[in-house]
Length: 360
Picture 1 (cartoon, rainbow, N blue to C red):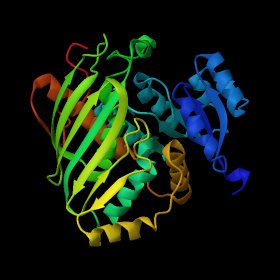
Picture 2 (picture 1 turned 30 degrees about the vertical axis):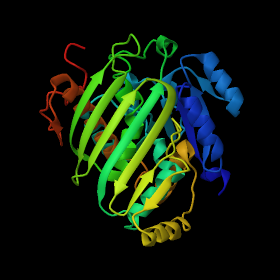
Picture 3 (picture 1 turned 90 degrees about the horizontal axis):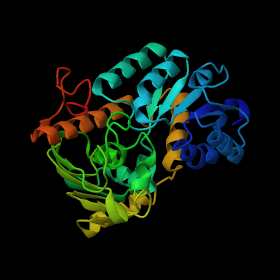
Picture 4 (picture 1 turned 180 degrees about the vertical axis):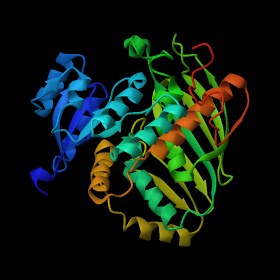
């Protein structure tokens, strides 16, 4: 692969964007060149540019869109800015990568889908945890038919966020962060649940604010009925002194359980226990064939590059983002009304245009 084959990317927003640089582009420099950095805080952009050897720094998003030599704009700005920025990137004839949540409503994600189709460019939402080696091993076992029918999935997101976290002006507010623990934290773990078991058929959610003095929720419990009839549950808190994430899946053929690292539980090690010695042997033989690719952001960006090169499906699609946004909408609506919510949500649903509670 030559230098001319690389995609030139501009990263906008050097908060979470700094992680995209360190854990993403810096690890696959044969496929990407970081051509520019953009942040309204020029000092923060200069610091990141020095660390990663980037010469071009701007503070104006529109200037990024005007850069003729940029192929991809990676949007890492606060959530309330995503929708308009994605549309501007597509209008400028560039591909867009965008942090979660992709946009702020089902209406907006449907508009992005139409804009992407009209632009002939691609939009990739970020769900980087899918590409941990433990999760990819489970996906391989599912694909080989070794897991069998799913019975139960359980998800734990027990993290800690203290008041200083919410000193950032846009956090903890419906108008700018758009939600709390369900949207900004557990969204990844719920994506992994669906990545393995598919979409839910129905859910019931309870949310509350108990840890910090903020507008949005910081604790939640959700019950899911998955599309194939499997049961699933999720517990979420931002008040756990010991932080963990955990996924556990019970199938007819085996049980799969992640490690408990809070932010990398999709990586190794996972445990896979078969229902019989024969299944254990099949698990061992299959995992011996596992071919590891890059993980985390590097894993998603690596696959993004290959999809653009071959014209194949993106590693995370707008359909994936829509499912996530539909789940968020249903969770908040269920918590607000005290009712379970059945999927899909129609375009005349009361929260199609915004999941924000009435009055916010």
